[in-house]
Length: 212
Image (cartoon, rainbow, N blue to C red; front, side, top):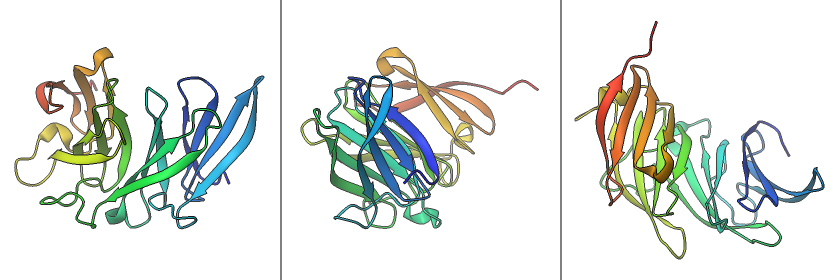
C-alpha cells in the first residue's frame, strides 16, 4: 500500500492524512484520531475508474478541504499527469473527478507542459493551480473552476525552447508568499522571484545565484 510513499498532506480540519505512493500507483487516506492513524481508503490507478496515479509523487489538499490534487510521473515521463478528487469532509474518502495529462491534447496548442511534474501549488483563494515540472523544465498555470475544481490550462513558461527563461532551467521547487502575491522558484541558476497578477499570470522580477 505504502510502497514508494512520496508525499504527505493533512486536511485543513486535521482529521485526515493523505499519502501519495509512487510504488503502488496509489493515494491512501488515513483518519487521524487520538494520535493514531486508521486506514480509510486506497485508490489505485487503473482500478474503479481511477486514472492518473501511475508514479504518484505529490498530493495536495485545497484550503477549504473540498478537493485533493495529485501529481504523478510514470516511467515514461511523457505521460505525467495531474488528477483531481472530491473529498468527503466527514469520512475523508476521495472520489475521482478528472485527469489531465501530456499527450492527450489537454494543453493545446502546447505540448510537453507537465512532464516530470513534481510540485503543485494551489492559491489560497482557490482560483489558480501551478505546476513545476522537471522534465519539461516548466512552470504551468491552470485556472480552477470554483464549483467543481476542474482545471483549465492557462499557459506555460519554460527554461528550454523558444522564449525560454534561464531561471526555469532545471526548475524543481516553488514556494509562495502569504497571499500568493509572489512566488520563489528554485532552478539550476539559483532562485527567481515572480510576481502574480490578478488573473494568475506570473512575471519574473528578480533572480539571484546560489552562493558557492
